[in-house]
Length: 359
Ligand SMILES: *Cc1c(COP(=O)(O)O)cnc(C)c1O
Image (cartoon, rainbow, N blue to C red; front, side, top):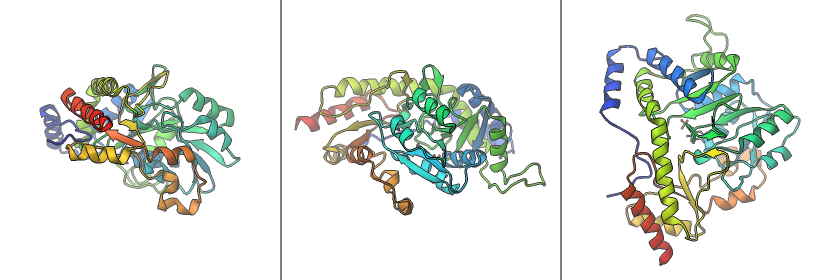
């Protein structure tokens, strides 16, 4: 039996919600979507939430709503999923890449050094489920008059000093991709904000820039969401805290079983509530360990092997080198973890990792 990297939830309660949405004969932006938006906004502690077709769409819509345009510079960590950067490129602004700190998130000191008169904002990414140092990032943003758009695509339910991520910046963007902490049986995303104008503009952008049925105030796109998936999201949002708690317990179990090995284990930053979207370890024997685990039926991942500033798609930016990012991408390895994994599976993976280092 293989142990998968992630196992999304499927059960009768979810299936019943899907069937009910099918029977409603309303498929796009109907009552399930409106209720999920209200419930998600309430969960994060924001006044608005706007559903859309993916996390990438959520990031792009928000940047567009913030007025980001060609010539603007946006600070972004190089160590993130490429969509974070792609959304910036899609607005024709320039991504300015930042190196990582010890917790795999952006280094606020380096961000300060890279601010120029063209800098308009920053996208801190709460990577792997761990919040960035929100206090440092907020201080920087207010000192230089920058907006913050939190990329929360890996951190649904994570918190900084007791407050949920997504509620600190001008807006927060989330993804519901099937491996994420909150899923909808397909693609999906949502933004949260306390800014009435950003919310209104995102609602417009996701539906062809429509003011009403017949009038288009600007050019948007079709980035709408659907009732069947919103129904799934509502069921799973009610379980999100329990699923995150489960991830934390399994991560702690790895921590106990892998202690003392010559591998770097994840550390929860002081002030942070980490929701372990991914359990990432570090070793200079990464490739050999991945091979060893694969031979034993254990899936692993690398998030991410090619840092964003080295992607061929952004070659023309001639981004300067980021030594810490370039080093860690050769050493990181993601072990299986999701709310759907069993203790036995975690123990089996941990035992195999120990066996590798004992050899
Ligand atoms: C998943 C992810 C995205 C993109 O979300 P999609 O729903 O796949 O478009 C963006 N940023 C980060 C950090 C992600 O993990």
